Image 1 (spheres, one colour):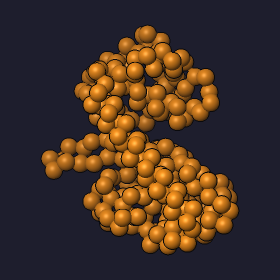
Image 2 (cartoon, rainbow, N blue to C red):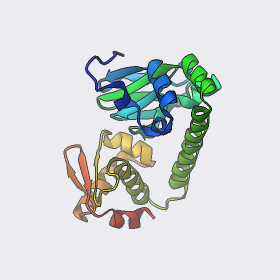
Image 3 (cartoon, rainbow, N blue to C red):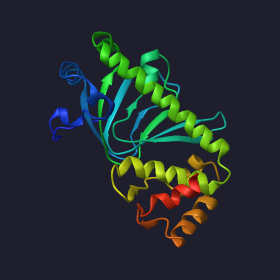
Amino acid sequence: MRRSNNLQPKTSVLGGALSALGAEARADFESISVNLALPCGVVLFQEATPGLRVFLLHSGRVKLSCTSRGDKTLLLKIAAPGDILGLSAVVSRSPYEVTAKTICPSVLRGIPGDLFRSFLARHAEASLLAAQVLSQDYRAAFLDLRRLALSESSAARLAGVLLGWGAAESIGEPEMRLTMALTHEELANLVGCARETVTRLLGKFQRQKLIAISGVSILIPFPEKLERIAA
């Protein structure tokens, strides 16, 4: 990992959940963390290794996955700007539950686990915020599990994934636009179906004008129509 020497001022990368902190806590966080500008394909941390560092994602995308004993990989989530990565492992002093890997050029802010725990001890508001983030992560995992278990069709699950990403990238916009940084195989892994099924469904969504694909960009012109499929 390399530190960035040509980024914007440090305060520009302190976004997401941590932006809710007071000025003193934000300044403290900035003083004990570093900016990282990483290319695609960098592993931030590996599943089952000691939780030694927390990362705040400012821009880019990071995929979170886990692997079975038979080396089958399960894609769990695509982290978006504002997400805090490695929080659970560092706070509980336990191994990372997942592997985190950038899937496009990304800018993050990293902080060693011992410094982060000391930071939480100094700032009660930061400790409360960390608890809220962990609670949100739990709720998101529950909703993802419910979507996979209870959605009646692969089309509904795929529509839900596309809408979730689109909402995160197009806040406040009437139409959604997202960057698809995953292969069809990885997307199928996330949706819980075969790669051929994802390819067929994406083609079907295009023919129905529910989405428009141009390279790695996906436009959802009428999200409410896709929501009917995801419901």
